[in-house]
Amino acid sequence: MSQIYLEMNHIKKTFGELEVLKDISLSVHKGEVVSVIGPSGSGKSTLLRCATMLEKMDGGELSFLGEKAAWEENGKCVYANKKQLKEIRKNFGLVFQNFNLFPQYTARQNVMLASELLAKEQPDYKAQKKLLHAQIAARAEELLTQVGLKEKMDLYPHQLSGGQQQRVAIARALALQPDILCFDEPTSALDPELTGEVLKVIRSLSEQHMTMIIVTHEMAFARDVANRVIFMDGGVIVEQGPARDVIENPQAERTKQFLARYRESQ
Picture 1: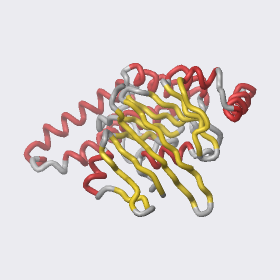
Picture 2 (picture 1 turned 90 degrees about the vertical axis):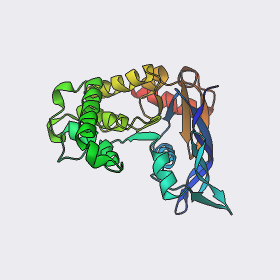
Picture 3 (picture 1 turned 180 degrees about the horizontal axis):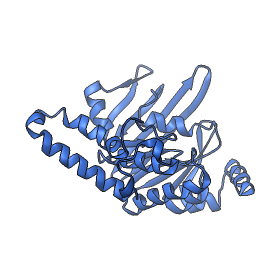
């Protein structure tokens, strides 16, 4: 079995009286694509936000590449110190539903920004400034070309379609060379005709064996691209297994009901 990149054990998360995640455990291995599906309110996005530390867990353990980011002590969830968490966060990139690009920067500048901020922390930054900037710019151009935006690098977000903006966001997430790429409903804010261009980029990343977690409502895409599908409902994992098996031949009654509704809507 390949190396475990992400491990979550007995994760719990509540908002007030609402228990959103109930004792969830999962692991993601190197090169694996895991799709998380389920109805609205099932806890999919909260699970991803806990995995990427945008939300603090109320219980459980979280590890990246064997390094613990959070664990339980005396019935409470505690996190590693700020310096450790900063290093751990470099392991993953996150692509949001709504792009989150900086409107005042071009596509190229949006992709370069995080790398330039990291470069400034290097002790020899001043002496190496021009070289580092050139390397970061070249990397941004390479990534934007990879996502099909070679001709759009110097345009601002408002000059791009939603699908193009999302592809810039994917390039930005790739810029720091994360071990895991996480997507939270990457096509939910897009018109149907723009969805395909984003899914095409994600599909190409899977062919390059990029490790990914994809929260999605695109069932055919999950079936064809993911190695494993996890179906969530009511804050628990109801069913998981090989993608095609879960999508085409679900075993749990709740999964059958959900996928039947999806097929009716097609």
